[in-house]
Image 1 (cartoon, helix red, strand yellow):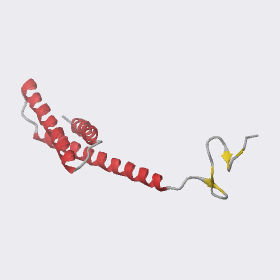
Image 2 (cartoon, helix red, strand yellow):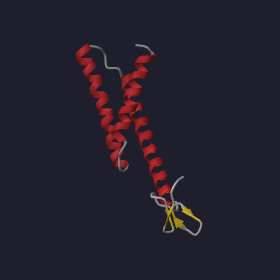
Image 3 (cartoon, one colour):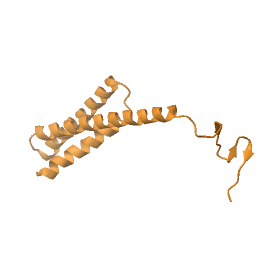
Image 4 (cartoon, one colour):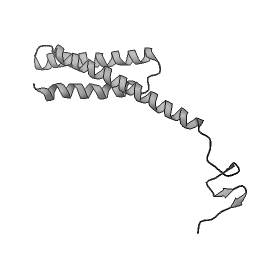
Length: 117
């Protein structure tokens, strides 16, 4: 078991944390989903003990938990950034030409049709 083993655990549970918490609503939902990720990690480590007859690897469980929590934090942070961008875009005024005449997709400006040459 080298560094790739540890990184494999970390990346796997980082992705798990992102997938579990991407659409978490509030703090309680976020905590429940993180606990679910930790439970998944613990169960998988337990299966390794049962199947391979090895000792329970607390270091792997710690790495898995760190991955879940950091993945969840990344998902919540990304969701907040996306939400802030959407709100900012919604506040922008519509594109207009002189005289505050909005431009439509069909190329009409102030009731006159303009065509490309």
